[in-house]
Image 1 (cartoon, rainbow, N blue to C red):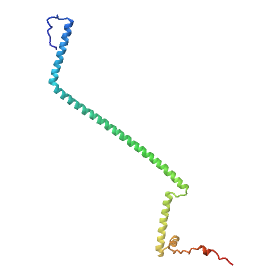
Image 2: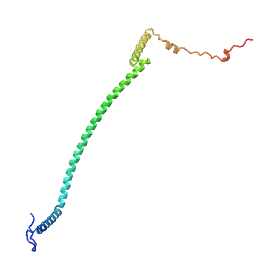
Image 3: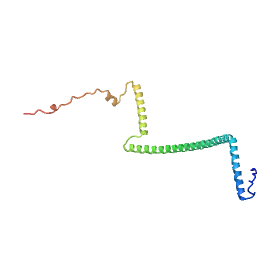
Image 4: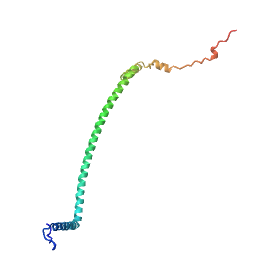
Length: 170
């Protein structure tokens, strides 16, 4: 409550000018009182504000970190899903490509991988039979290819142009 101030002696109480003067004086005194109190408790108030600010900063930082972690998890999930979809699409594309290459090779008369595997198996079986026959006869069995490779090669002399020409008869 504001202290009561005695009116100046030349004016009567209750006059409007006096009331305004009194109010202004009381406002001035309230301002001075607030200033004095702020000086006394200013350091305490400042420290209290700093403490409150640190608490608010920690809360804000924790909320920001949580939001960031949620965003990172969401982006990781999206990236994983995208990678899975892309791998599936690459697998389909690879199958289409392999099918087209296989059809093109078939049109060219090239044997398939399965046919080549069957031929290798058949060759292995035939080689095994040959080894069995060689052991029974104790005489190596040679194939036509082996005989040709073992036969000595003879090279016929090259004919020259002069040898081909016949001498003119006179």
